[in-house]
Image (cartoon, rainbow, N blue to C red; front, side):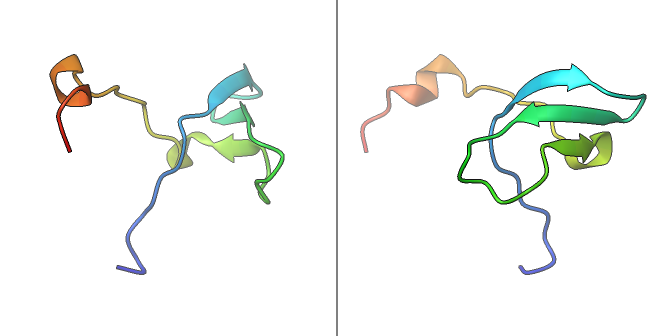
Length: 56
């Protein structure tokens, strides 16, 4: 599992800096650069509404 890619977020894209680089709005507690390559981004897909109100 150590080699699996993990994702965090979603984060807002502040601006496109180049053809493959974006600047993200990250929380101050994050110890990473806010400028990332598109290869490290994944499109956010919200959960369908029928799954958000399920009892736990």
